[in-house]
Amino acid sequence: MVNHKIQEAEQNLLHIYNRFPVTLDHGEGMYLYDTDGKQYLDFAAGIGVTGLGYGNVELNEALKAQIDKLCHTSNLYYHENCGKAAKALASACGMDKVFFTNSGAEAVEGALKAARKYAWTKQSGRYEIIAMEHAFHGRTVGAVSVTGHAEYREPFEPLFPGVRFAVYNDLDSVKALVNEKTCAIILEPVQGEGGIRPASREFMEGIRNLCDAQDILMICDEIQCGCGRTGTMFAWQGYGVKPDILTMAKAIGNGIPVGAFAVTEKVAESSLKPGDHGTTYGGNPLACMAVGKVMEIFEKEQIVEHVKQVSPYLIQRLDELVKRLDCVVERRGKGLMQGLVVTRPFAEIHQKALEEGLLVISAEGNVVRLLPPLIVEEKHIDEMIEKLEKALTF
Ligand SMILES: *Cc1c(COP(=O)(O)O)cnc(C)c1O
Image (cartoon, rainbow, N blue to C red; front, side, top):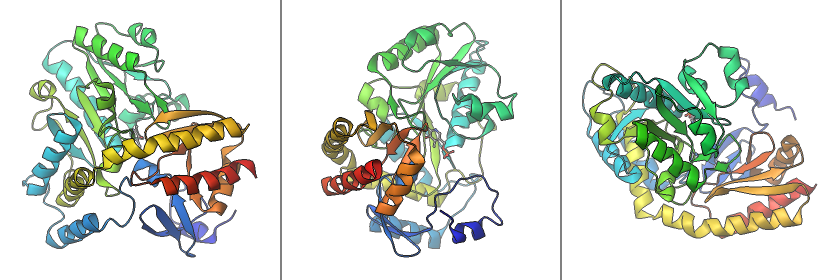
């Protein structure tokens, strides 16, 4: 399908994204509208970004007021929003200290630097990072270095040295790579781009034990699976396995570009110090207003409680599709982070879903990825199933 508006726009945009043939205009709650006024039920939320949906009045009013007051101070001057957002985020994610970034990839970069600096401070001689096959951690060079898809890495090699890849959910494969040079193990508690694969409890616990035994740092990337998505505020809390470093982004700003990494007191004491790291925009008053407000709204509106209540219904309706349709072979996921493994080409399903007015995305090629705004209700799930079934069976 040729979309002339997109063709025109791309005259001056580097052609990097294979954009869908829809030009979005505005959003309201669970719905997005294109420039022709067509309505789409949103089961993608960007890519798990707009957890609170669209047009949240309280959030938008706070952001508008902040723009009128002050958007930038550089980090040479303290702004109250920054401390408030860090306090709210640290409390939500159960960590001690927070550093704000502008994106997820930057949060991963910071986490890797924090881990290397920790080993350097301890003079342990450790520098190797163990990452997981099928992992996705972002597009900057450091983040690509730990991304578990060879095709994302190879064009940019040589990358950040000392990275080894283990098989996700296979503790023995991790053990086989651990040695006296291992500095950190990085993983997503639920792999997103890698096809919506939740870690097993044994895997998370096993990694924690390996790390504890040898003073290796455990880094959890919760950029996609964090912020209420899986039915706990952060996914690690659902496993009861706390990382030493946690990366966040996507939903913590509900669309305002902001990420963060958080560390425990133990890491903070022996890691990045003034001069080691920084960012011009990171932690600016506008981004921090977004994070502070999002955390406040999550608490006030009991978003996590809502995810816990509504996700069994989504799972039930998706499991019915697996039973009913030959082209749907498996459902995987946790909470409102769900994937359907399909045997038909995603491009066809997607095209039909768009026609039906439904936004979904793919993961790892043959997985229909469902990441609705967390404010989704049963009636939206019913509407999605009806549209998706049409898209799967046309
Ligand atoms: C999206 C994502 C990133 C990268 O975040 P950006 O904001 O796009 O840089 C990193 N890790 C995971 C798990 C992600 O889903």
